[in-house]
Amino acid sequence: MIRRLAALAATLLALSGPAAAQSALVGTETTNDTTPLWEAGVLAAGGYVAHYPAASQGQFKALPLPYLIYRGDTLRIGDQGLVRARKELADDRLELDIGLDGSFDVDSKDNKARQGMPDLDLLIEAGPKLTWHLQPKQAKTQIDLGVEVRAVIATRLIAFDYEGITVNPELSWFDHGFAGTNLRAYAAIGPIFGFDGVNDYFYAVDPAYATAGRAAYKAKEGYIGTKTTLGMAYPVTERLLVFGAAQVGYYGGSVNEDSPLFRNKTNVNVGLGVRWSFWQSDARVPVVR
Image 1: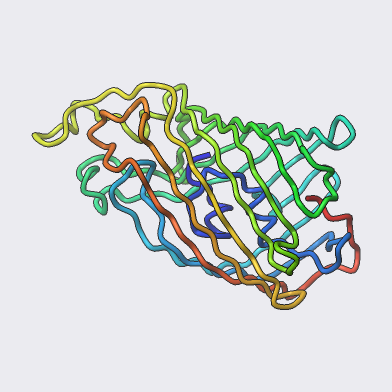
Image 2: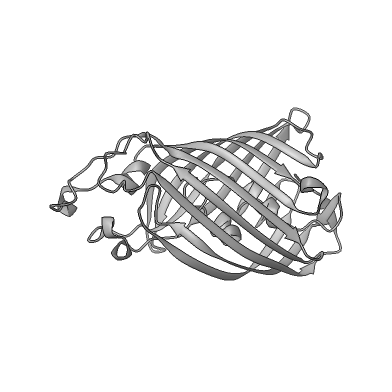
């Protein structure tokens, strides 16, 4: 995953990291064992994000928005991704889910490397993820190995274009009571690979857009970079939570490091936010960690 909208709404990081763990940072848990089946509230977040992997520029984003969560046994909406269908296997240690997410667009006139080129459109990303839980799922501390495969669709809301596939293996850690406190802490690291044209979307330069300082370039498939994510959240009350996160993406060794659009080996994204849950259903379900 490259620039996830759900994660950005939660942390404004344009993360490639998993929405599941990041939404766990900002999810509601009013008891140790259960959470509302339905929940509605308002989330406001702000932060700085890079325009695309290995870009030399970024943008500040501020995003207030309402949210609605449904936590069904199989179907989940607004919790651990925009839409998610999940199936647990092998004594709950192995989990397969199908998720749908998205990411924000970038106006090329705001990026020196891409000036005169087409904008980066809103992206919709969908596909399966297989997760192996190394700890029992009800443990306070979770360590997971996962592999996510997503088809990437660019859209201007009036047209849809298939852009390729991303593959993101990842090792993640989540603590529901960090250092014996009420803090929730999250860390993850994993490489990202692009295939079937998705690397063209970020790094290719068609001859029509070549200039004296930007040679034509055909992107290669394969390794994009590795991202490390750290996040923390603190429940002020049962309904009010503050959170923050930071991510470092390292793109040295990328197969497209020689692209004229590859500008920085390192990107740093940061975000802060607050979430208020103004309504929760009486019906409750077990916490999914």
